[in-house]
Each structure stands twice: as structure tokens, then as C-alpha cells.
Length: 527
Image (cartoon, rainbow, N blue to C red; front, side):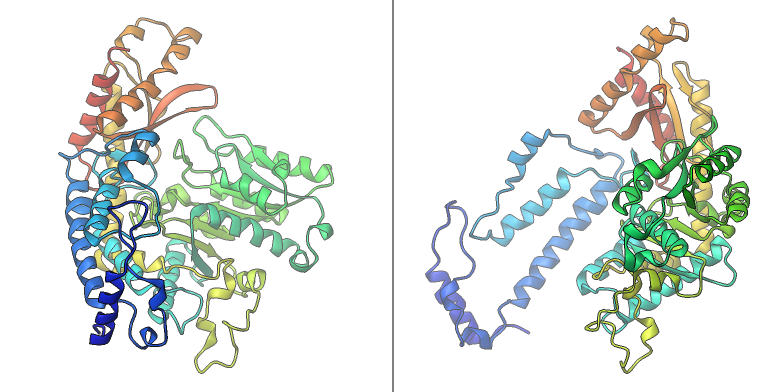
């Protein structure tokens, strides 16, 4: 509804009395001395103007953030240093507001100078590519501004989250269901798991606190995500009480070493309570032997959590789900659909096999202003009390709409295609002079070195690896400044810097794989 004639008059009077801000090019859009009883009788927002602004901004989003950002002829990024970018963006916040035309230009600039993670040649992280259905779901969520603590304020999104969690549990293999919740990141899911495992082992700690706790210890592989040690620090367990289990050359936890560490911890008087297994490690893409680890956890009565944030998508594939064999025996699972399955960020599920309300008991605070038990509907649909958040975005809706549009079959094909593309790239690397695989990829993490012509005559040894260590950072710098693509690099253990190529997007083709290798050579052949 448009404002009344009287409110328009007020706006005109206000505009006549506007005072200049420190910047002559900026004006104040409202005037404080008009906030009186009369002005409160009409809406304070011109809805028609707001709608027009949103319409214009959506045009910019479609043209710049969708079309151009996914166009292979465009740059992945337009690199500027922080100092340069601060100047280009004019970040200062002033007393006076800017005109809509200026704000629309701010929108264009934000898109222009951002990294285009939906570009077909963005291979830098564990997420990539444009997903149109999930993107539209994100727009809907932002337009409606829901919060997922009670059914009364988010009925549709409460039910879609339930439906998605149920289906994901089926994929894990929990035929009898379980419990779960979407939350703000895989790191958060892992923290949920550590705290829930501790509560399961020592429920009195919720009220009594750490002073009542024995020396609790947990176990994880040397290849695990850093959020495990962060969880131990945040929850008061202590990083020294995270026993790091050795991994084999492929990056998989050595199950026999896990059992030895459990025995050692018990002999020291510590109380083991949890094991974290990783399904798809961040760097190497390795999958821990879940079946063997589950046997050990059952033997010693330990909570088994599987961090499948990255590798969980393989459960969608009949061809590749064997990578997570035994995951149905886990007590909890973290799985991020925003990674391989391409849902818009963030979209992260924490799944629990327990059906007795353990998650609710662990996190419930029973806030009476939200979770009244005498409501007129079934309050079991008020899910917020089992979350550590109060306000919580309905991220599951982004996965639900996408899954509805594509079906399980298309999601399976996406996973299979990405893994096939990784195999192709690995084969091409082995054919090319100056390229060397770190190892055969198990998932879509393809790790390799580029050896410039000047170093190819050197034999394997300290001199070669010392010089090779400097190559990837320089190639990455040139790559970023050129804007042609983005591929990550890192050292690992005693290994010199190598490239880690992550393949996800169905927009990427064999030609893009060939382009990456050609471009790395062109950028680094003079080193």
C-alpha cells in the first residue's frame, strides 16, 4: 500500500529541510524532527519505491551475478589489493543516505570485484557452480525473513526441513529414522557432535559443568578438519585431550592405531568418549575406514561421529556410496549439501541416529516466551529448542527445492560426473611432461605438482623440493591477477606446495580440465 497524501507532503517538507552531510554528494533521506504523532499515523516506507528498487536490483543480479558470473569468457575474479579495493568501494558509512542510483552502482561494484565462485573455472574450494533452484529458494527465504524456531512463524520451512532430514537419514542407511537439525556450517555440526557425545556420556555436565567432569578424551585422524580441535577448545575439553591418530599414505585413519591410542588413554586414567571419522578429507579427499572404526567404537562403547561434510554426497551414488561403507553404524553424521551437491551456502545438516530426544535434552533451555506447551497446535513441530541458535535460517529449503526439481537421479548423475571428471584430469596429468600426481584421487580432490622446465633435470631430493615449494604460490598469484581461473595450493606434512583441484560443477567440461593444465604451464614455465 502506498503512503497517504499527507505522508507525501510530510516527505516533501522534510526534503526541503534536509541538511547537507559531510559529503556534498550525499543527502539525508529523512528528518528527525518530523517524528511526531502525525507522522506515525502513516507508513514510514514508500512501498512502491522499495519495489522499484528491488526490481532494478534484480536486473543487475541477473545480468552481472548470474549471466556474466557463469560466462566462461568472463574473468573468475578482478583482483585488487585490500588498499586498492577500499578506495574503489568507498566503504565509509555516513549520516546521510545515498540515492537509489548510487546504491545500485554499489551493487554492481560489489558483484564486479567479488570472486565468481559460480564460474566454470572456479576450482578453489569445496563448493562451486551455479544451482538455479537453490538460488531461487535463497531469494524466497530472504524475501520472507523467516526464523526456524517455531512452527507458528515458519510452518512451510519447518515441514520442508523435516522432509529433507528424513530423506538424508534414509541415504545414510538409518531405516528407522533418527533426529537432526540444519545449522550454520559443517564446523558447527562437528561441535554439535562433540557436545552431544559428551552429554550422552556424562549427562550431568549440562548442569554441573566441567568441575564435575573426568578427564574426557576423543580421537580423530591427523587428516581431520580443524573444527574438531576448535570444538575441543570451545567446549572446555582441551586440545591436548584430542588424540591424533596416524593416517596411512592415502590419508585414511589407521584403525589399529586408533585402538592402541584408546588403550593408552585408558591406561593413563582418561575417559574416552568419542571417535571422529572423516568421510572426504579437506585436502586429499580421503575416506576413513568407517566399518573398522565402528567395530572399535562398539568394542569400547564410544560415540562414533562421521564428518561427511564433503564426502556425504557420495551416498547419492550407487556407484560410489561404497566409499562410506559402514556409515549407518555412526551415532551422528555431518553432511553439507552446499558442497558437492551445490546447494547455495550455507546448507549444513547434523544427523543423529538416536530417536529418544537426546538432541532436545542436550540443548533444551525451555524458553517460555517461544516454546509454550499450551499452544493450539502440535508443539512437537517447534524445533528450535534443540538448537544452540535462537534465530535460525531455513537452509534446508534450499536443498528441498533443488531436490524436488532435479530428483535423486539427477543428483546422483552430478556426483558421478564430478568423479569421472576427476579421473579424466588425473589421467591427463600423468600424460603431460612437467606434471606429477600426488596420488590417484579417491574423490574429486586432484592433487598435483607442476614442475617448470628449469627444474625438470633435477633428481628427486631436497634441492628439487625446496625450489618446487616456491612454484605454486607464484603461479597462484599470477592466476589471480590474470583472473583466468582459481585453483588452490598448500603444503601437506613434509610435502612441498602442490595444487589441489576440486571438481564439482557440471558446468565444467574436459576442455576446462585441459585449460587448467595449459594455463598453469603458461603461468609458470618461466620459473
